[in-house]
Image 1: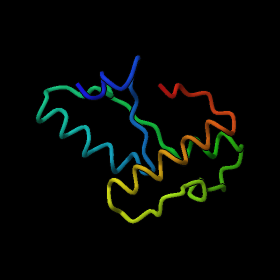
Image 2: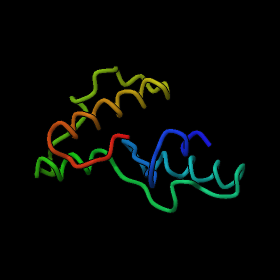
Image 3: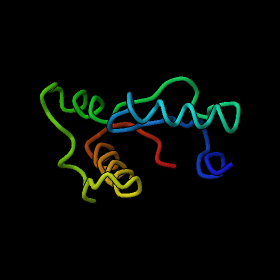
Amino acid sequence: EWLSGVSSGRVFFMSDNNGFDWSFINWYFHHFLGTNPFGFSSQNLGSLYKGLVRDTFKNFKHLRKTRHSHHPVDDARGNAEALLELARMGLKIRLD
């Protein structure tokens, strides 16, 4: 319900380490809701940045403002800040 209330279209899951984070998110949604609103795929924030700057050796983590403390809220906030910066750099993304 929350995802439907804060988005106006298809939602997607993006994470710094989507291979790790996705497994937990997917399991919890299927276990407790019977379905995953994100579907069956996810996006990796680091790979997105590498593509945007066209350099496979670049790292996006300097774009975070909130310290990466491994507290879920801090980490999500920092990743959101980095994603917003990617949008400012020209990444086409819906921010509604």
